Image (tube, rainbow, N blue to C red):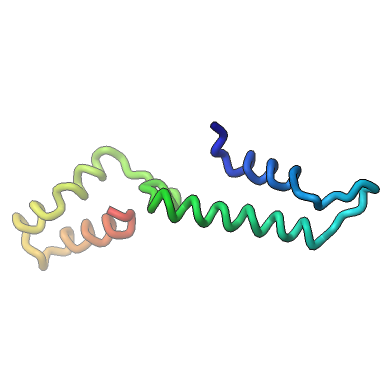
Length: 96
């Protein structure tokens, strides 16, 4: 169905009793609805696990291949090589 955070937030806020019948805003209810949205997002992220694109890190196919072969590169060039250290550093920063 709908899993967009904006849709969920809008649905929760519209369904909340934050707006009374006379048009006044109940600040406590509004804050509670916002907190519920935040808790829902935290739980959804915990259930789904870490995302490979979280934080805007999307690697090119060549970079993915380089990270996949980093152990072979280390065996070929040696662990003391600066290029190998950089590959491991960048792959770790990207979550690979």
